Amino acid sequence: QVQLVESGGGSVQPGGSLRLSCEASGSIRTIDAMGWHRQAPGKSREMVAGITDGGSTVYGNSVKGRFTISRDKNTVYLQLNSLKSEDTAVYYCTAVRVVTMDGGSYNELWGQGTLVTVSS
Image 1 (cartoon, one colour):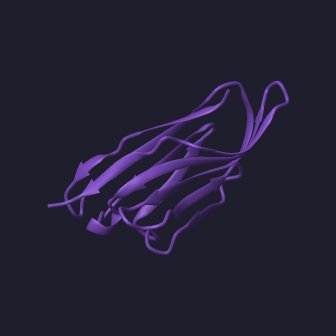
Image 2 (cartoon, rainbow, N blue to C red; image 1 turned 135 degrees about the horizontal axis):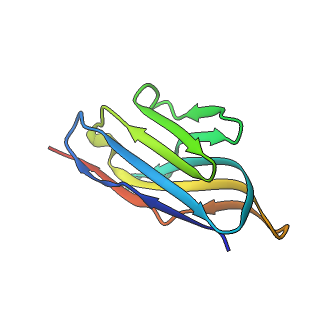
């Protein structure tokens, strides 16, 4: 069984920084892509950033230039800089096309979410 476990959320003042981590645990052979989505109160879920196993990245328009995604094997990180109140949301880690050592696969996995609150 493969699970995604996030950490690093918390409260920060506007202009501050946080670093989120997400580790995929289990008997994993490959993960094609990992990323982050977020959902703010009363809003729909949106893509924040994604990274492939080859290192290609993509960012949502609202976070370009402020957030940086990186990956080390089965762990993905999101560096959040210059945080704004509108970045307040639950941040979810995702993994796409996960292949396990026994030949099993998952199309998409989601973590349980970690709350980021930006407030003065």
